[in-house]
Amino acid sequence: MFGVNLKLYDIFRKDLHLSDDKARELVDTLDESLGKQLDAPVAQLATKSELKELEGRIKTSMYVVGIVQFIAIIGTLIAVVNFMIKK
Image (tube, rainbow, N blue to C red):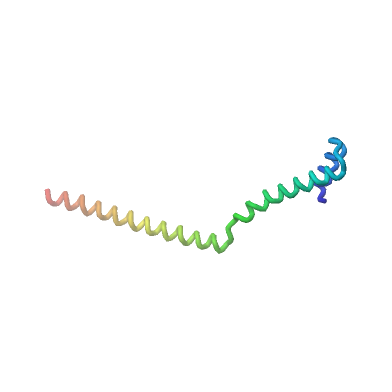
């Protein structure tokens, strides 16, 4: 048992008047439950290679969107100039 678990064990045994077996079982159950909850977020973390891959995809998407916007702006300018010339 770790230090915190030992403190919990003492609290359950002395203050709540549980038997040694019940206090140990309760501490083990709490420890197991908290361990599972803490391990779950760690499993969801991305690796460096996954982050690099994501960075590349984001940059590519940004460049494509920028090019499309540039083409739309140029097309709009050409249309406005063409409209002004024809009048």
